Structure formats: structure tokens, C-alpha cells
Length: 576
Image (tube, rainbow, N blue to C red):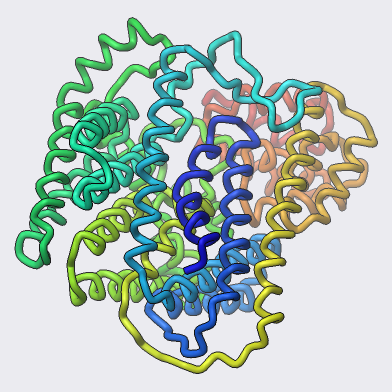
């Protein structure tokens, strides 16, 4: 492997996760861009490594199946936004080429080692950052001040309660993998015992403070892996012992977390009150279980080709009355995902998408168990299992950072299915990496423009020029859906340009419904002498989400004397 790619593999496990959430709203996009740039460079340098004979493993096959299922779903369903399919397929192709490069490396253990080093250092950096934020040493504001460059953080003097830079489950996910990496490096004598002990104590504490319920599943999975190593492991005794100490640290702080949190909140006001143990069960019952039911119901209604990539949110809204949230919380932009990657693929791409993921998962696990289950394979199994469990409850693999890391580790598992002789010219191999590089940088530029547009709109700087700018951004495939959303939000609720407003609202509602957009669509439909339909739409959303009644009434005040909207007015007069 080239020296440059050794550095890149180390950075892939570190750099995007440092940027992921500290600098909102640009931080997540900087993380995505940095991950994609690293991949583009890695694939470019990989072309210098001569290897005429190439092998195909289960991960490449899984990606090809997912790509094929996405195109089939598009042909059958014709979803309203082609841009979502393009981005989705681009990510899958990126995954395919990453998998192909990693899978055909001779020394895959070196890949595992470099990823482990990146995760170890990343865990240390994130722990320091997050403790600093929690203590109030510095707090990075969740928005941006006009006039500052997008790479400059603004210190929030109001101290918005936000103790951690990660979303809690992502934070626990990453730190649990960092803990496994610490065990891996300690077993290979890469770090000293004192460093190892301090690391697992710090990570166990940080994971408990994240209040992640998913972390409890990671711990249970950890014991399962240790049991597997006991019966199947090849010289993994030292690793198993180290990993058990890490699990013990996690359990110790999880048990203490309800009491420790109460004490620490008094000294660290930015730390959120609560614990993973106290929160156990609520998230599944209130939100995830209804969404899982909706996704399964959507799949059963569209088993062969799904509803189309990116359309689950619309299907979820249509089924909202049938599977209501027990908590009844406000969901302004209704869920774009069902909190389960397998059910999401079944709902959007049908049986082929689900089978592709299932095949890849089973084949990788089989390859790990079938091959030599040494400390390298044990670390890969733990890291992959952590991200996979997370993906059954959240959406980490929708982020380039987690997606790329998952793909790299899965591709280190050897299970040859096919081989061929490569005949492509060397110059052709640079086209795709160059495309990734350009697309990722242009994507960040587009998002910066979009967020700047939103900031000006929310600050009250409304103008016709701002609307035109939003309309022009709607032609940008990378931000098409959000640009349309802002355009419709800025347009008035009167009947001027009615056909265009109806076109936008219909397009958005077929993709990702938003409460305000649904309300606007109902009004525009009523202008078209379809008042019964408009009133039914308003009643439907208020039956599901009565919290919106106040904002709907406020928006309706200037229109209340229009006779075409009389039936909506009657609905809004009801007590919810």
C-alpha cells in the first residue's frame, strides 16, 4: 500500500468525526466533504498500485445489488426528486470502488491497524472536546453570525445547553469503537498499560454521560463477541481480557450514571440531565416502533420495487393515523427514515434492496467466522457490529463518515466469489476519483449557499431577489429539495402564481412532508375549488399532530375572510 493511503486510512477514521457536529450548521457538511475528499485521494493513489488480477467479494456484490434495486425502483415509481436517487447511487458507487480497492489489497491487517489508530486518537480528541464543552470551557454556537467566514466558530455567550458535539448515539457508537481500538492496540503493545487503563475509564465515563440507550446494546454485543472468541478465537486471549475490562468500565459507569449525572449537572450546567438507563425503552415505544410498523406496512404494499429512493417520509405521513406516535411529540419535518436501515431499504427499494443488504451482512459475518478469527478479525467484528446495531435504531450509514468507515472494515473480510483480469487503462481509473473530488467540494459550496439563504430569510431579509435566488438553487441537484422547500416557505399564501405554488407543494409532499408545507398545500388546493380535499388534509395532520393548531391559526389570520377557505376555517376552529 502506498504511503499516502496509509495516512488517508488513518485520517478516514479520525478527521470526519472531529468535524461532524461542533460547528453547526456547516459542521456535518464539512465532515461529509472531508470524508469524500479523503476517499477521492485514496482511490487516486490506489491507481498507482499495479494489480492485474482482481477479486470480487460479498461487499461489492451487495453494492451492485443495491444500485440495481435503486434504478428499478426509480423506473417503476418515478419519485418527484431525481436528485435524491443520483446522490444515493453516487454513494453506492463510492462504496463499491472503496470495497474493490480494500478487498484486493494483500495486507488487510495493515488497513485494520491504521483504522484502529485513527479511532483511538479520535476517541481521545472527542473526549477532550466534549468535556471542554460540558464544562463550559468553550461552547460553540449552533448557528452562524452574519459576516463571519464559515470556518470560524462563534462562541455562544448564552451557553445553549449542548454538552456534546455528537448526537448521543453517534457519540456512543464512535467511542465504543474507540474503546475496542484501544484494546486492539494494547494487545499489540502499541500503547502502554497506563494509557490503556486511563483510556477505557475515560471512554466508559463519556459513553455513560452521552445518555445513549444504544450503548447498552453495544455492551451486550461485546459479551457475545467475547464468548465467540472463547470458542473460536485464534490467540485472542489477551484481547478478550482487555476488552472485558473495557466492558466492565462501561457497565460500571452505566450503573452509576443516574447518580453521577445528578451530581455532575450541578457543577456542569451544560450537561443534559438524565441517563441511558432512565431513558431505556421510551424511544422504541414512542417513535421507533410506529416507524418500523409503517416501513413494514409500506414494504408489504410495494414488495417488489418499493416506493422509490427517498420517498419513505411521504409514505410514513400517509400511514400516520394508522400508526400514531405514543409520545405525540412535534415532528416539524416528518421522519425521512424509519430508524432501521433494513426496513428502510425494503420500504424504498423492495425485496431486492433488502436481500442485497442481508446477503452482504450474512456473507461478511460468515467470512469472519470462517477465516482465522484473530485479534484483527475480532476488532473488525466489534466495529462492524457496533455500526450495524446503531443502523437498526438510527441512520449512521446515511453519513459519508460512518458509511466509508463501515465499507472499509467490511471489505477487509476475505470471501472470494469471482475473479477477473483488469484491462482498464490507467488514465480512465482517475475519472471517478476526480468526479468525487469535484462533486464533494461543489456540494459543500451549494450547502453553504443554501444555509446562507436560510439565515437571511429567517432574519427577515425577505425580498423578491431572495425568492429568485432560492428558485435558481432549486436547479442544483445537490440541494434541489431543500431549495424548493425554502422557495415555497417564502411565497405568500395568496392565489398569485397558484399553479407554480401547487406544483412545488405537490412535489415536496411526495418526497418529505413538512407540517407547514402540508398546510400550504391544503390552502392552494382549496383555491382550485377543491375545498373538501383541502379541509380533509388539514384535519388529517391536526388529528396526528394537534400541536400545530396554534401555528396554523396564526398563518391563517390574513386569509380567514376568503370564502374559498371556509371549510379550512371550520376545521381550525375545532379544539385540538
